[in-house]
Image (cartoon, rainbow, N blue to C red; front, side, top):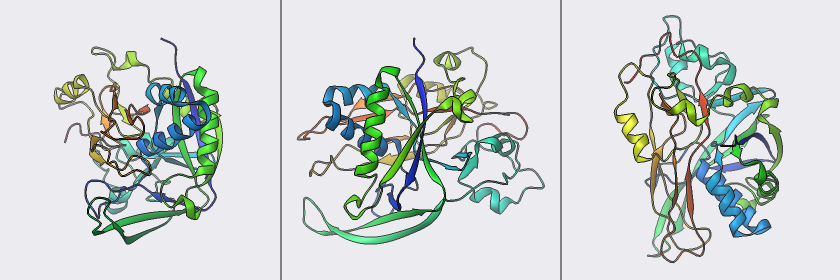
Length: 322
């Protein structure tokens, strides 16, 4: 099997962007931009430029992270959700609040130490409540809007794609930047300028090289993997999670995703997946599912195969399964 092309895409937002979307109920707002949102924008842009078949191949065969962050040459990943016992010298309050861990300090964090460069956010966030008309009943429905005005940080997307799809991916990404990411794009939110780097040019290069499918086979050397985006598990993945022994690194949360098909009044099926930051003692295969609802104007694909990052230093104060 040919190894995928691994890319690191840095997004310089021109102002700010509308974060997340409704996640399961009216007032619960996601605190990140999920892979499904990124794939939706990239897929639409790829279809506009190259046609539906090329877009479908890109979306179904590739893998993305959720929106990550970078400050200059320092990259940040979601806080691993596996349980870690803080060291006696660690400030517990600050330790619990961290949402983003510098890549070079992952080993320290997993050993129970407070990362000096850890972050809770990368800009000024505001949450507003507005009202909209329900598309079926015309009733007024309140909904939350989370916005982020970035400081000097840049958004980051990790991508694993076939080399033959690189031209399609990069062209779609640049059009995506002009079209905008997230909500309120007509007001100028979500627009960005993208720079695409080979993973080998960044600190991710040597780590991502260790995420081959062979590393996830039963009996292989025990390595833990951090999901950098939401993961829709296969039945085999779920079985391995259920059978994980108590001394293996494992920690996860769930995210509920829903939304409308483009600008139509057709509602997508609700999808529940493992959240970004989930940690597994193997590399899940993940599932790509056709979730096209009746009456949809186009095919709707949910790519639940995120980029995975091997975790360093899983000894120390790692406490295993909660």
